[in-house]
Amino acid sequence: MTQRYFLCHQHDIAETQPRGFDIETDPSQEPLAVLLIRYDNQLYCYQNRCPHLGIPLNWQPNDFLSLEHTHIQCSTHGALFNPNDGQCIMGPCNGDQLTPLTIECDEDDKIWLKVS
Ligand code: FES
Image: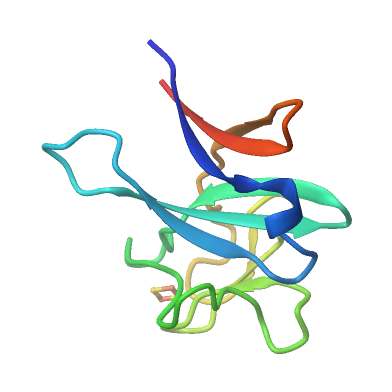
């Protein structure tokens, strides 16, 4: 069964200001760490988990971008990922990909994470 979880409102996510969320989908498990980013005015959502070591991408809250704000960057070894497809284009996990997650936006401007 698909469940949906409220993340934030659309106006809470500005271009180059991604946000992280910890979503409790199952009380018996660790929360699902999620990264939401607006890029070229499209919203993308990924699991906040670097494919290199399986750890969170950020050290500081909501700090997910490279210096130039062009890519998602892992804080640990600096891997760079395309914001629009999660593909790693540089770093130890080159060729791997962030795990995409499904979101939907409703008529009230709310962004929901869908988990099945
Ligand atoms: S853990 Fe992300 S690049 Fe190594």
